[in-house]
Each structure stands twice: as structure tokens, then as C-alpha cells.
Image (cartoon, rainbow, N blue to C red):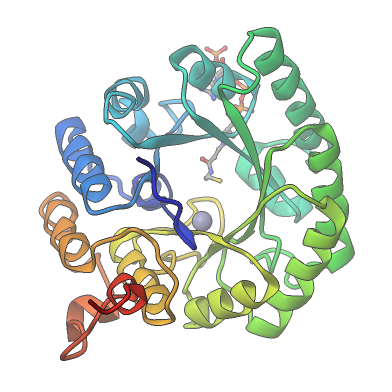
Length: 317
Ligand code: COA
Ligand code: ZN
């Protein structure tokens, strides 16, 4: 039986993290990471990116990783697609969720996907049509991400109104989720409240997810602010691996282990076993250059006498 959790945590390190790593992370080790993290309770994992191999060789095994991930019971398999061609590759395999991205910053969109933001928005409409024409409506979910929504290393601060307008367009076009991303880690909690409230008011019942980077130490404070707005879906990466090859100064996502600890401590269930999650780091670490993983929980350990949110919620016998 599937237990509904208070908060959905999603691992994005195999995409956001590995796109920054030039040494190839062997396919069987990617699968070991995915299987172990799923067993630890992270049931939504962005497993790869459908980009041209000559652009990011790390994802030359995108098809194989996806095929194998789809065999893991209980796992929601997500994958990034930056254009229609990427989405079609994902559709043909039956990925559960395709994550499409548009940058709110015009300059970042040009650098990242080599086209105007309006072209990227229009491409999303084509992706929705292609998904529907392939008979995959209701089987493949389309999530639309707004990159650089909280700041851009080329353009600086991004107007809330621009974020809201892009979100409205994507919702109207058929996005089944809107993901708001602080791609370069510029956001603060006050700004998070402003932007998320605006987007959530605009898109109505469509779930809004948060994707934070901890580049300047505001990552978990931003999570707390987003929780206050009612956000219940968060991206994070094991050991804080992450960044964007097309955004100068971008560094790691919020750390999955620290996120799960904070949520659990607050009494919000995630379904994740913290001890088991910490062990997954060994798989990532043995395939990466030294010292790439960060994380406070891994450094400090759980508090003495820690009881989990689930244990605290259980009625005493
Ligand atoms: N997967 C595989 N091949 C693809 C592809 C995809 N998603 N998209 C395009 N291609 C191929 C085309 O078929 C074409 O091949 P050909 O030269 O053999 O004819 C070639 O790549 C160029 O296609 P084009 O449409 O001109 O793409 P482009 O060179 O303008 O690049 C993107 C556009 C979107 C594919 C590229 O900029 C990209 O992948 N960006 C994503 C960057 C990223 O991952 N950022 C971090 C995450 S947000
Ligand atoms: Zn990111």
C-alpha cells in the first residue's frame, strides 16, 4: 500500500549534479545509487537528462538508465528534456514524468538552450501536443520548470511579474506541475514568499514545486519559507551535488539528507529513513572526484536520542 507523505522529496543529483561532472559515472553505479536511494525512501528520482550526447557526455546512457529505473517497483522515474526532441526520446521509453525547463531570464535561456524564451514557451505547447498525440495523456506527466526564477548570474534580480507570466503560460499550455527554481542560489526567504505566493495564486490547483540551490547558504531557510506558502514538493540532491554548466557561479542543490532531517524534525513525514539515506553517499562518493559531497547531517550525525516524525506521531501503546 502506498503511504501518502506530508512532503515529497525528489532526488535530482543524478541530473543536476552529474551534468557538472566530467568523469563518466558508470551506468551500473548510477543504477546502484538510484536503487539504494529508492530503498531508503526517496521514491521520486530524476534519473537522467535527454540532451545531445555531444553536449553532455555524462548522459550518453540516458536510455539505458531510464529503462532500468523503470523496472524498480514503486519508483517514479523523472527525466529532464530541454526541447521537443528530448521529450520524444523520453516519451518513447514511457518515463513517468518529463521535466521541461524554460529560463525566466532571457539571457540564461539563450545560453542554456540557444533560443529565445518565447520559443521555449512555444516548444512546451508542441511537447504537450506530441504527448497527447502519442496517446500518453495521463501516463506521462509533464512538469514545467522555471529556471533562474529567483535570480540570474547574467541579469541579476528577476521581476516577479515575469515569473508569474511564464508560469501562467505554462499552466495554460497544460503543465501538470510548475517547478520554480533558484538555479544560481540567489534567493532569500522573503523573496521566496513573494514569488511562490504570486505563482501559486496564478496557477490555481496545479502543484508548485521548489528547486533551491544552497550556493549562498540560504537553501533550507528558503525551504522553510516555501513550506509556509504551502509548497510540499522539494528537489534536493544527495550530498548537495549540483549546478548548471551554462550559469556561471552555480553550485550545489540543497542537501537531500539535511532537507529530510529538517522536515522530519519539524514533524513532516517524507518516508525517508535517514540512516539508510546517509549510507547511499558511499555509492556516489566512490564514483566522484574527492570531496564533492557536502552536508551537515553527514558531518554531525543525528541528534542524540532522536525520534522520527513517524515515531512521535504514533499513538503510545
Ligand atoms: N537529444 C538528442 N539530440 C538532440 C536533442 C536532444 N534533446 N536536441 C537536438 N538534438 C540534435 C539534433 O537532432 C541535431 O542533430 P544533427 O546535428 O545530427 O542534425 C543537433 O542536436 C542540433 O539540434 P538543434 O535543434 O539545432 O539543437 P541546438 O544545438 O540548438 O541545442 C539544445 C539545443 C536544447 C538541444 C541544447 O542547447 C541543450 O541540450 N541544452 C540543455 C542544456 C542543459 O542541459 N542545461 C542544464 C539543465 S537546465
Ligand atoms: Zn538546479
